[in-house]
Amino acid sequence: MKISHKIGLVASIAVMGLALVACGGKSNSGSATKTVKYSAALVTDGGGVDDKSFNQSGWEGLVAWGKKNGLKKGVGGYNYAQSNSDADFTPNINKLIQAKYATIFGIGYKLESAIKNAAKANPKTNFVIIDDVIDAKNVASVTFKDNEGAFLAGVAAAETTKTKKVGFIGGMHGAVIDRFEAGFRQGVAAVDKNISVDVKYANDFSKPDVGQALANAMFNNDEDVIYQAAGGTGMGVFSAAKNQIKKKKVWVIGVDRDQTPEGKYSGGNLTLTSTVKGVDIAVEKLADDAKDGKFPGGKTTVYGLKEKGVKLARGNMSAAAWKAVQDYQQQIIDGKIKVAEKPSQLKK
Image (cartoon, rainbow, N blue to C red; front, side, top):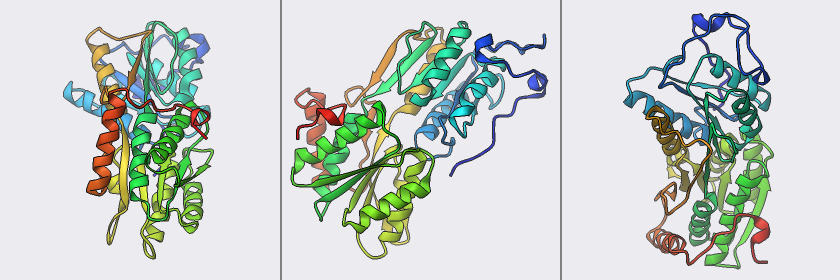
């Protein structure tokens, strides 16, 4: 569910005019809030912190960090700025800069340009970009080997399908979702090259109605397992599956978080498994590093299966499917299987 409220600032800074990033986030008023050493906040990429996916995972990591350090939600502690569209990125970052948060996280590759500009204008503020890389001394970059987790999702789908037809629904084309698509297709083919993979894109991460329409078309085409890598749009895939399950067996593979709760229906659970991405782990660790004076500015941290930054949840897979997943996982960790990062790298 998408929420529409924006971050509220306390009265001490409410009177401050919003500054453009290009101006270094300085206020026209002389009453600047004091920088609190251990404060941190994040900006969402268009989904809400309750999107049951990517943004929510990041927020959960920040909440965990704040609570273990005895901080409260709000200025001087931990907080978030909700983006309802790309146009909100820069204003939201500016609000957090004005509020003097010491570390600001951009949750998602779509924030790359806004974070890059803000970091250049505010060299004393720590910034983190998730799912992209920015070359700047005050920016820590985090990327994930999503293709490795997606490969395992492909194995699970191939081991489960009865129709030998499965689907993939992506949010938007780009380097990140390319990794999901490539890994999934490669994983399916590793088990059975005769299984067809139908690939569709919603061209948005926040439109569950589009996700539902795409999924219904796939289910009506006898595709009985769908892997969705589409953020909030993916909630529509679960809605479609819950309607279809009334007449035939279908499965959904979740993304970013363990989406087993989203698969519950009166007769059971239709979430086959989920590719879990440690956004929460990365956010909590980097906030800790910043607090301890060890912020890795200028560096990129990559999380894969070997680093336990991505994984496939046990979910509702059969014992045989789970065993196959574990076997392939070890082969990837051992370097015996190299997972493609782009669909163009797949063998035809």
